[in-house]
Amino acid sequence: MLSMIQQHHIKYLHQYKGLSLRAIARETNHDFKTVKKYAYKEDDNSLPSERKKNKGSKLDPYKLCICRFI
Image (cartoon, rainbow, N blue to C red; front, top):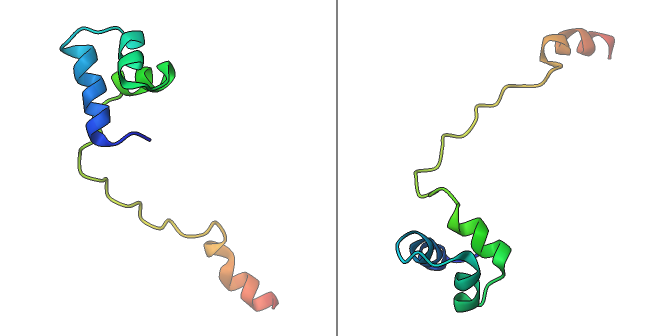
């Protein structure tokens, strides 16, 4: 994974300088597929989403019955 600075540099070269992905790959010494991945990647700088709440087990409704059998 590239650092945020490298990711932004690739995005900058592609969007604002108008360089092709192959030219960026040559200039930055990264693989073409890596450059393509980060050139079109959406910004993920937003705050992390809230954690999912624990739903519980599928067996929760049956725990009482199971405990009776044991």
